[in-house]
Length: 247
Ligand SMILES: Nc1ncnc2c1ncn2[C@@H]1O[C@H](COP(=O)(O)OP(=O)(O)OP(=O)(O)O)[C@@H](O)[C@H]1O
Image (tube, rainbow, N blue to C red; front, side):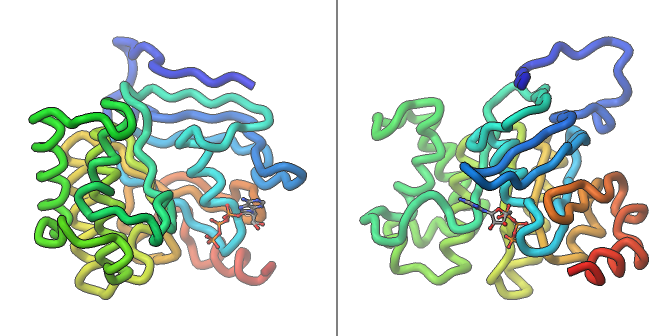
């Protein structure tokens, strides 16, 4: 297995939007005694929103975990061209509800990669945390305990934690699941703005409308890639019908 970071950009590379941020080839990954991803080869385009689509159990979260570096491939090649460690917003969040953490403390944990766990934050970190809280509209909840939040407020807090990591690659696992339509739309607008600000965004989603508005799409079934490219070319009626038929 080969994992590489910071591949130098060549002068003859295509325009930035087409340049891969992550590239993987013949990738296999899973859990002890449970292989999940089989021979995946694809790339995640830079400065683009990529949607990971597929039925329950098709391997979307596992692939996000591999891209985030929290699940190690059993074999294959994975290259990150990004400058920073990816920011990962898992489906339920790594923070348990029972922990006595406030919203602000939860978002501050996004600075730990730079600062170290439980270290004092500097002024710049505090500005980053304030900006992330404001951008997700949870600034007025900053002193509330995480366990006292609604599902949507909690989800926004976890996305704010992802933003506080200031990464150039943001990975989100179903970031809008459980949110009301207005909150879903505001998260979509935010993610689109992040791409314009210079972040490569990858999100697993079951929302085909969201996936259709993405710049790129990876379609997974049973841990195998059955489509990749522009959503208009990947999410065709026939591809979706084939996928659901075999379930
Ligand atoms: N921690 C784990 N240990 C063992 N097997 C796991 C673990 N997490 C997931 N799996 C298994 O890996 C397979 C892929 O799961 P994964 O969560 O990646 O799918 P998914 O496409 O994200 O599903 P969903 O849409 O339901 O979130 C499933 O068969 C699942 O049961």
